Length: 135
Image 1 (spheres, rainbow, N blue to C red):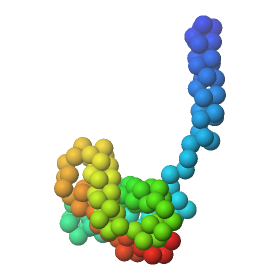
Image 2: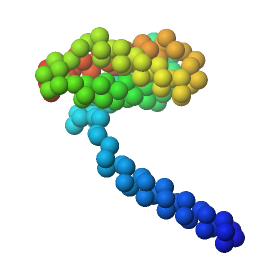
Image 3: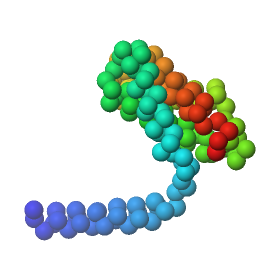
Image 4: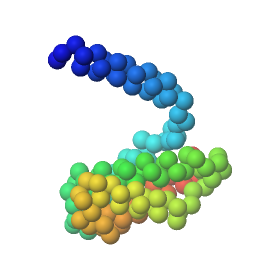
């Protein structure tokens, strides 16, 4: 690599590093302390839903369910303390379905969009049933 290219590369790398170090701590955390619980419940529910429907691989169903769990957690963590404890079933199911559908479109190219939505809805419902009133 010649000296000019190396100088441009290193100065660009330093600029990107400076910006990322400056901005990352300023971002507000969007998930609460129960993110791993919700991701785990979502992944498990996604696997069970996929097995019952006999569609998709175990890993892909777990990924879609985990994404649904993370999305449900993220949405609920933005709510007030009272509403975090008393979740909305329709919201949890809808957010889970949307997140799983998007994840399925990314991981499998949208081959089974309705099935992806069902898996996410099941994950959202499972999170709601297992955690509502417990935060």
